[in-house]
Length: 327
Length: 264
Image (cartoon, rainbow over all chains, first blue to last red; front, side):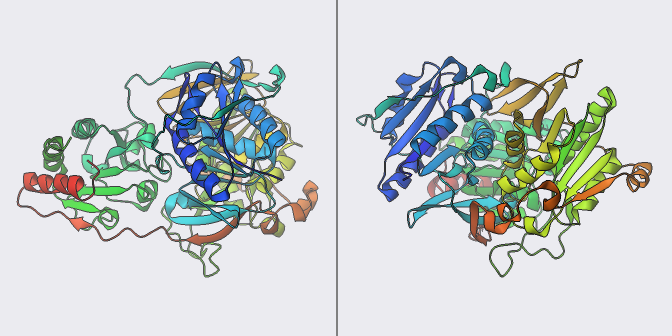
């Protein structure tokens, strides 16, 4: 019988990514609810010494698949190895992070395993021994509560920045196991030929704790400098509405909304964004929303925890100075 | 180079989503149905490659008869042929069943490259594209913003932005690419294009044509079961920050963010 909760760790350049700690922490809570063990699966090359970190966040066991062909990540290698391990060990629950890598991996893996999957979930619970997941659909205009039928493992991905991370406990250790798998070079049909690093050091919107976003009200690309300054003081990153991206003021990677990124920061400050439904859809799970807009009837104020009506070109620099007092 | 584009029809991004009384589906009245925006990038990329390498672009859609309109839109943009998989038994299918049906059509077509949107903007899953590739036994590269097909038409490089970096992946053809915003700027259908599209072949297929058992698809075969749909959690009424000057408002806001919201 299927038993145990598995989480797939995400590694890059020999380091474990933050999303992994979120997923391990959530996996720990689900494993406790089921009264079962939590196993973290760590794939990579020469990364066995990272297994301890996964234990600190709650993993009982760490299954390490170590192979030069498992770093950097490729879909083919990961799907093959995880597919073999899952078929051999039959976990009851399989969790991944809904990072770009996790989204790429989960879709194909669900097809390989022939199981249902719930993508980009914002909450999980165990009901009658089964995983029940809540996931925004229509970019958050509605929520679906889903479960699984005749489908093991019960498989889901967790939206970045949503699951609370356990306080790491360095006294905890895990049983570290070496995974048994075979990997045929003929399976590896895609390969990474180049990695272009973003030299700006900008935090990705999906991982940012604080986002300052600008829309049509910014009036042009030059004015984003005031948002950059506020974001810098906050240790956050700058986003944009579709209007600003379509106008060519900001790159596409900055777009928040239904056809852009879906974000869940602790603090989202919307500047000169009226709040078109497709934008609201992309940031509705932010913990605290601030709207700065000169139009008091702008729909964004309906979603905002704090609204300021006024000229953002005066308000944003003033706010930048004020928040410095608290940081 | 023969290229296939998978197409889904979805509610327009401006649509207000209302939950139906059954709590399992959405109210479909007054919805403006459009081609999934990510699929438009796929259609555009396919047309650009066809312009360079020659060959045909075939659009494969799945869903009720209204999906014909979106396939016609793709034909008006310049695609050559359309196929609609339409069968009542498919209603309520999950991503796996949908991918199986698409793969069943595509496996009988001669193709070098397949495009799909990186996700439908309705279910927000992103599973159908990679699953079609899995069922066809070909590789996929997902969330792609740039495609460079080699001059000999036998391989390609695809660019995938991930958090903080961009990966350049290489694959031989055939391969399935899922399109992310940024791949291109889709063209609008021209009036002559719209006129021509009316005469382009658009074939309909049922499950029986594909040799798929109706019991394998549809609502009852879902492996991911929807228990309930609900409206997003309401956010409590917000506070409007008062003040005589921008400085006063900014100071009041910063204080609330620190003391009340505790986010700074």
